[in-house]
Image (cartoon, rainbow, N blue to C red):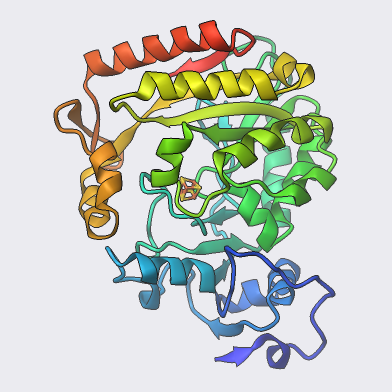
Length: 370
Ligand code: SF4
């Protein structure tokens, strides 16, 4: 164990120390190559009081395991811990739903704690943020991948004329942007790629992103649900009102701003609360925001293992999320036992929500719903 200043002969780069309620970092676990890289050193400089602990692999951190069901411990680990690693294999995968492709992640883990979060938890249930420091390799990989596609000649549900790359499969990019400049570098990369567009969903409003000049090549999808659900389920996130208030500012700053209605939770009174949310959007968003908006609708999927863990710390959330009377089992691609709404229940829910959107927010096309 050492601190960052004694590890390096020269001083760390000049960075403003992070002052954010989500990240009170005390320990940075780092592979030596990651800590020594320019991006790793930037992260260390943003958290100058943190202790640096060298590790052989960013995946093998037994200290972070074993906290299932202990939310106070989770939140402490999420706030107080970061991991730095080098991403070894870079691959871009086809998607076809929200995005054409899933970009290699530049981070995984999250400082927030949504009760339904399905981001894989390979660092214990707390799953704090790991930053991948080889950002130049990742952006070079993306540039090559975009070049290989050529122009998009046929519109699809992802976009009319750009190949869309999802950046945030395993993390929340708005929070990642507090920790390092990886997201800024990705936004700058896509700024110069006229046939492609970056995209990420977020539940956190980071106004530093407003300075990054995306020039329309990054799509931010603000994730929304009725406030009553979010207060129970979206733990540590920005409040729904704050996310809605950010939409116009992000449009004015050059982002394409879409919405992400996810997860849609069916419960008594859901239709009235979604109606209120849609009316709020209709009242609050500017004409400019409405003119470019679209949304996706994703019904809740839950997981038996997560249900068991949540019962230990947030049983009230499980009253909404675990509904055997409405749900059916589904084995996911990675073999996990998931549950989702029964086909008939889901179909009726999707149809009803689309009706409500047409009625209360007719300016909002639904890119896809499932
Ligand atoms: S913000 Fe996203 S990644 Fe973070 S806990 Fe919530 S669902 Fe998971």
